[in-house]
Amino acid sequence: ELGLEAGDLMSPLDTGMILPEAIFEVGQVVVGQVEGRRSPEDVTLFASQGLALKDMAAARLVYDRALERELGRHIEL
Image (cartoon, rainbow, N blue to C red):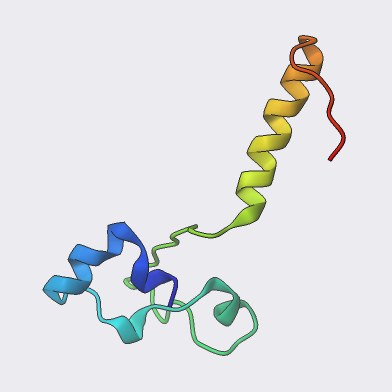
């Protein structure tokens, strides 16, 4: 469902280049619910919308750099 809403997939979906039934979540492939690539000619596109881990990694990098440079201020949440 998430993949069907990704902006960069809308045009290929609208034109029929990609069929909705060919879009899966990476977790489905990992746990074996769906097959991944079946041949070397198959193309895989990974759209990372909603991947919070990426956001957390970027935030940690910014936080660490701010600490190194003694920038910002500590707040309790």
